[in-house]
Length: 79
Image 1 (cartoon, rainbow, N blue to C red):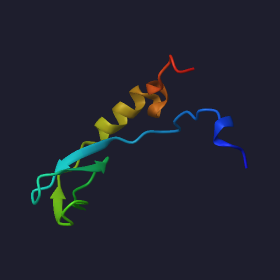
Image 2: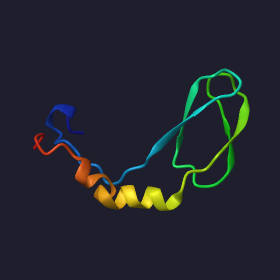
Image 3: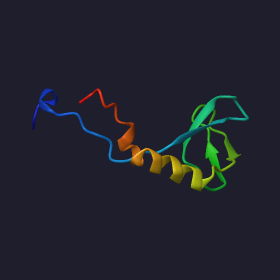
């Protein structure tokens, strides 16, 4: 197995948008990755479930297309 010191940096292969929802029970912000349909989410802090409002799927596609699914967001000064 190679040492981690010899590994080349890896570019992203995709992206996901994370939306923050405030838990109505404990008021903590809970991250939810791209919720495109109504759902219940569970707060990782207090453990309670609560319903969330979905985000527009077309808006997610637009952002992913603009950023070439994350590839265009890579810091050009890094390489």
